[in-house]
Amino acid sequence: MADILVVSSKIKKFIREKSEFNTSAEFLQALSQRVEKLAMEAIERARADKRKTVKERDLP
Image 1 (cartoon, one colour):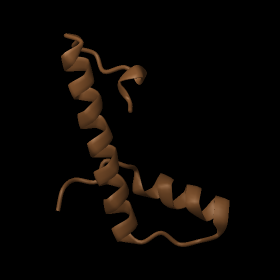
Image 2 (cartoon, helix red, strand yellow):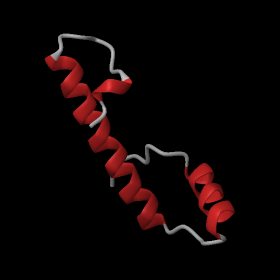
Image 3 (cartoon, one colour):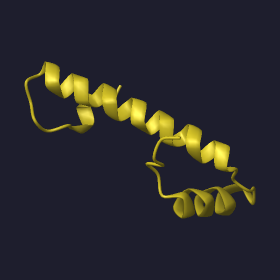
Image 4 (cartoon, helix red, strand yellow):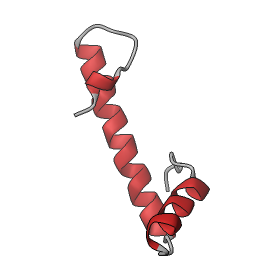
């Protein structure tokens, strides 16, 4: 299992406040995987532009 890249307590609190729903560990893992994928895509865009800074514009 990869590292969780999101702050679990903050995500759980957000979901609870918006919906009164609980949050499963599987949801947190899947969300973290999506964040990792987005970050890797942004890194590749910055690299293609020959930059060392990942910027908002690098998000898909």
